[in-house]
Length: 181
Figure: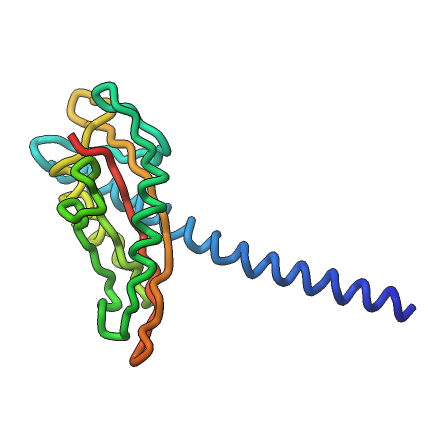
Protein backbone atom coordinates (compact mmCIF):
# COMPACT_ATOMS: atom_id res chain seq x y z
CA UNK A 1 0.00 0.00 0.00
CA UNK A 2 2.88 2.39 0.78
CA UNK A 3 4.42 1.74 -2.64
CA UNK A 4 1.09 2.49 -4.34
CA UNK A 5 0.86 5.84 -2.50
CA UNK A 6 4.41 6.75 -3.54
CA UNK A 7 3.70 5.92 -7.17
CA UNK A 8 0.47 7.91 -7.09
CA UNK A 9 2.28 10.89 -5.52
CA UNK A 10 4.89 10.84 -8.29
CA UNK A 11 2.18 10.53 -10.95
CA UNK A 12 0.23 13.43 -9.46
CA UNK A 13 3.36 15.59 -9.39
CA UNK A 14 4.05 14.80 -13.05
CA UNK A 15 0.48 15.64 -14.06
CA UNK A 16 0.62 18.96 -12.19
CA UNK A 17 3.95 19.88 -13.81
CA UNK A 18 2.64 19.11 -17.31
CA UNK A 19 -0.55 21.07 -16.71
CA UNK A 20 1.42 24.12 -15.53
CA UNK A 21 3.61 24.05 -18.65
CA UNK A 22 0.61 23.60 -20.92
CA UNK A 23 -1.22 26.46 -19.23
CA UNK A 24 1.39 28.98 -20.35
CA UNK A 25 1.25 27.83 -23.96
CA UNK A 26 -2.55 27.90 -23.92
CA UNK A 27 -2.55 31.47 -22.58
CA UNK A 28 -0.13 32.54 -25.33
CA UNK A 29 -2.29 30.91 -28.00
CA UNK A 30 -5.41 32.64 -26.65
CA UNK A 31 -3.70 36.06 -26.74
CA UNK A 32 -2.41 35.43 -30.26
CA UNK A 33 -5.89 34.40 -31.41
CA UNK A 34 -7.46 37.48 -29.78
CA UNK A 35 -4.92 39.71 -31.51
CA UNK A 36 -5.39 37.98 -34.89
CA UNK A 37 -9.18 38.31 -34.65
CA UNK A 38 -8.91 42.01 -33.74
CA UNK A 39 -6.31 42.49 -36.49
CA UNK A 40 -8.69 41.02 -39.06
CA UNK A 41 -11.49 43.28 -37.77
CA UNK A 42 -9.20 46.29 -38.16
CA UNK A 43 -7.94 45.10 -41.54
CA UNK A 44 -11.41 44.65 -42.99
CA UNK A 45 -12.83 47.94 -41.67
CA UNK A 46 -9.90 50.33 -42.17
CA UNK A 47 -8.10 50.79 -45.50
CA UNK A 48 -4.34 51.17 -45.39
CA UNK A 49 -2.65 52.18 -48.64
CA UNK A 50 -6.02 51.97 -50.39
CA UNK A 51 -6.79 48.36 -49.48
CA UNK A 52 -8.46 46.27 -46.83
CA UNK A 53 -6.41 43.40 -45.36
CA UNK A 54 -7.07 39.89 -44.18
CA UNK A 55 -4.35 38.36 -42.02
CA UNK A 56 -3.68 34.63 -42.10
CA UNK A 57 -1.24 32.77 -39.86
CA UNK A 58 1.25 31.03 -42.10
CA UNK A 59 4.71 29.67 -41.35
CA UNK A 60 6.15 29.83 -44.86
CA UNK A 61 5.37 32.11 -47.78
CA UNK A 62 6.78 32.70 -51.25
CA UNK A 63 6.81 36.28 -52.51
CA UNK A 64 8.21 37.21 -55.93
CA UNK A 65 9.93 33.82 -56.14
CA UNK A 66 11.66 34.21 -52.75
CA UNK A 67 10.81 31.81 -49.91
CA UNK A 68 10.37 33.27 -46.44
CA UNK A 69 10.09 31.23 -43.26
CA UNK A 70 8.05 33.67 -41.22
CA UNK A 71 7.85 31.47 -38.12
CA UNK A 72 11.64 31.25 -37.82
CA UNK A 73 11.95 35.03 -38.09
CA UNK A 74 9.17 35.56 -35.53
CA UNK A 75 10.91 33.19 -33.12
CA UNK A 76 14.31 34.86 -33.58
CA UNK A 77 12.91 38.36 -33.02
CA UNK A 78 10.81 37.22 -30.05
CA UNK A 79 13.89 35.68 -28.43
CA UNK A 80 15.74 38.96 -28.88
CA UNK A 81 12.82 40.96 -27.45
CA UNK A 82 12.64 38.58 -24.48
CA UNK A 83 16.22 39.37 -23.48
CA UNK A 84 15.28 43.00 -22.71
CA UNK A 85 15.15 43.67 -18.99
CA UNK A 86 12.00 45.64 -18.24
CA UNK A 87 10.84 47.70 -15.28
CA UNK A 88 7.32 48.29 -13.98
CA UNK A 89 7.07 51.58 -15.86
CA UNK A 90 8.27 50.45 -19.31
CA UNK A 91 4.77 49.93 -20.74
CA UNK A 92 1.23 50.84 -19.80
CA UNK A 93 -1.45 48.38 -18.70
CA UNK A 94 -3.42 49.20 -21.85
CA UNK A 95 -0.81 47.50 -24.02
CA UNK A 96 1.75 48.93 -26.36
CA UNK A 97 2.81 48.44 -30.01
CA UNK A 98 6.41 48.71 -31.21
CA UNK A 99 7.30 49.03 -34.91
CA UNK A 100 10.48 47.01 -35.58
CA UNK A 101 10.30 47.24 -39.38
CA UNK A 102 13.11 49.80 -39.64
CA UNK A 103 15.32 48.05 -37.08
CA UNK A 104 18.22 45.75 -37.90
CA UNK A 105 16.21 42.64 -36.95
CA UNK A 106 13.93 43.20 -39.97
CA UNK A 107 16.92 42.90 -42.34
CA UNK A 108 15.02 45.02 -44.86
CA UNK A 109 12.99 41.91 -45.79
CA UNK A 110 10.30 41.82 -43.11
CA UNK A 111 7.59 44.00 -41.63
CA UNK A 112 7.64 43.42 -37.87
CA UNK A 113 5.45 44.67 -35.05
CA UNK A 114 5.68 43.73 -31.38
CA UNK A 115 2.64 43.98 -29.11
CA UNK A 116 3.05 44.16 -25.36
CA UNK A 117 0.09 42.16 -24.07
CA UNK A 118 -2.04 44.23 -21.70
CA UNK A 119 -1.55 43.17 -18.09
CA UNK A 120 -4.93 44.31 -16.83
CA UNK A 121 -8.16 42.38 -17.27
CA UNK A 122 -9.34 45.05 -19.73
CA UNK A 123 -7.79 43.92 -23.01
CA UNK A 124 -7.79 46.67 -25.59
CA UNK A 125 -7.08 44.47 -28.60
CA UNK A 126 -8.96 46.70 -31.07
CA UNK A 127 -6.69 49.71 -30.43
CA UNK A 128 -3.57 47.53 -30.54
CA UNK A 129 -4.75 45.75 -33.70
CA UNK A 130 -5.42 49.09 -35.40
CA UNK A 131 -1.82 50.14 -34.69
CA UNK A 132 -0.47 46.81 -35.97
CA UNK A 133 -2.66 47.02 -39.10
CA UNK A 134 -1.19 50.46 -39.84
CA UNK A 135 2.34 49.03 -39.52
CA UNK A 136 1.76 45.87 -41.56
CA UNK A 137 -0.34 47.70 -44.15
CA UNK A 138 2.56 50.03 -44.95
CA UNK A 139 5.09 47.51 -46.08
CA UNK A 140 3.68 44.00 -46.22
CA UNK A 141 3.66 41.76 -49.26
CA UNK A 142 0.20 40.44 -50.06
CA UNK A 143 0.28 36.74 -50.86
CA UNK A 144 -3.18 36.82 -52.43
CA UNK A 145 -5.56 39.55 -53.39
CA UNK A 146 -9.29 39.70 -53.83
CA UNK A 147 -11.33 42.52 -55.30
CA UNK A 148 -11.00 44.82 -52.29
CA UNK A 149 -9.12 42.71 -49.76
CA UNK A 150 -5.44 41.73 -49.78
CA UNK A 151 -4.48 38.59 -47.90
CA UNK A 152 -1.31 38.88 -45.87
CA UNK A 153 0.52 35.90 -44.38
CA UNK A 154 1.85 36.51 -40.88
CA UNK A 155 3.59 34.50 -38.16
CA UNK A 156 3.27 35.20 -34.44
CA UNK A 157 5.44 34.29 -31.47
CA UNK A 158 4.90 35.14 -27.81
CA UNK A 159 7.70 35.53 -25.27
CA UNK A 160 8.10 37.06 -21.82
CA UNK A 161 10.64 39.80 -21.09
CA UNK A 162 13.11 39.57 -18.23
CA UNK A 163 12.58 41.44 -14.99
CA UNK A 164 15.06 44.23 -14.45
CA UNK A 165 17.10 43.84 -11.25
CA UNK A 166 15.67 47.08 -9.86
CA UNK A 167 11.91 47.69 -10.07
CA UNK A 168 11.55 44.79 -12.50
CA UNK A 169 8.40 43.49 -14.20
CA UNK A 170 7.83 40.80 -16.80
CA UNK A 171 5.73 41.55 -19.89
CA UNK A 172 4.37 39.14 -22.48
CA UNK A 173 5.20 40.33 -25.99
CA UNK A 174 3.65 39.02 -29.23
CA UNK A 175 5.88 39.48 -32.29
CA UNK A 176 4.07 39.61 -35.66
CA UNK A 177 6.08 39.15 -38.87
CA UNK A 178 5.11 39.54 -42.54
CA UNK A 179 7.29 39.51 -45.66
CA UNK A 180 8.15 42.96 -47.00
CA UNK A 181 7.46 44.07 -50.57
